[in-house]
Length: 251
Image (tube, rainbow, N blue to C red; front, side, top):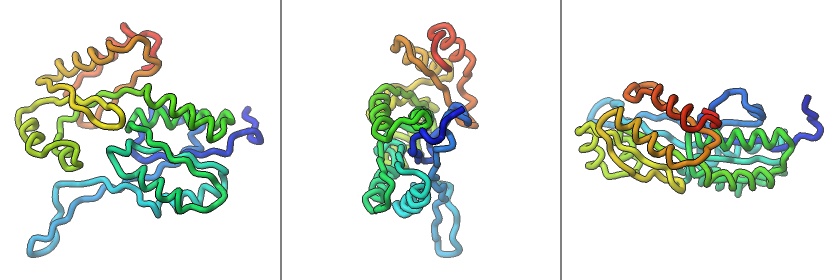
């Protein structure tokens, strides 16, 4: 049984892009998720407003963070904020602006995870477990900064128009690639998406993922995430590859 008198008074804030491999990980009760808002773009075309097909994610504002800091400071002495890569969203900037304006007793540390999705979730789980074991904010910060460079991610993003809307690539290139039915592959390096190659079929996509994993000697964890409509990739060959190649890794 945990001795709550000796537990660390650290909580963790992350944003809703984080994905978790297990819902009830150690320290999950310390984690608080501040959401993005999915907003449909509205156009005025000489008559009633019409809803465009484009949508965008609105990051939490500095005021949203200040309100959350205020609430959590009533229970915790230290607040760790771990966000999606600052090169993909302004959420880290908003968290830091809020921390500069926040003048309550609780200390606030904001860290750029340089990742997203499962990568961000893994870092949050690590921080929560460390806090649950009694680690201080400084100790958790050091562990995270050592782990951030050790997370590698590969993405296949067929719907390139979304990336173009976010300014991640040229719109004309995105349209052409979608029309050709290409499956573009991106690596995630130093917090940004870096184009690697384009493949033409799910089989080639699976082979590209296997080639990428083969570059590593002994990864401790490997995770695969597929969107609800991502039926183009068969996961069973990848699962078998991981079992055969990295039997010690948690998948």
